[in-house]
Length: 195
View (cartoon, rainbow, N blue to C red):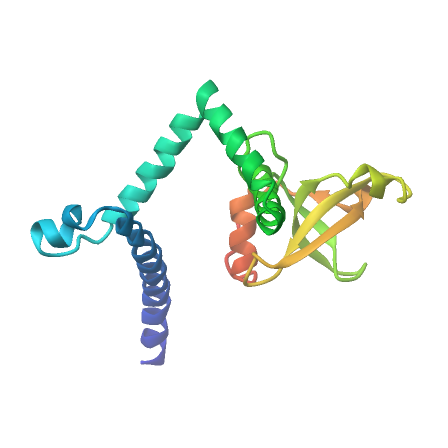
């Protein structure tokens, strides 16, 4: 009986957690309907809410924003908007930092999380999976002896927190593993082994 119960848990728990996370994401994105005038909201028009309509609206807003800013006029407007934001003291540092990180993570030319690597951590006799993030800054590099690379070592089971390390390139082993597979391996604490 215990075996069947555990088997049931192994099937239902991931499904329930996935449904729960999707529900949180969709209900959060449904809050975007608040920007729509009250008379055009589904509750007013048809008498009830439509789950997921806010998600569709959010995706459309993001897509249209990308479409409009991906031309000469849109680029000009974005540059002027960013100049304005950089003049506001607290907003400037916060927006600048977030913009730099998002540009690095989402741009096609960025190096963030492009490769899974094996590194010695937390000491020389143990290994963990990390992600290649680039090379140390010039100012840092001139104080290092030899060739170094920058890596991000995520924590388990929450990979959004972790450690940024600069390691000798000779100590880093590139893995023949996708970033997605490496993340699954880390989040599952080694239970889900990549193929």
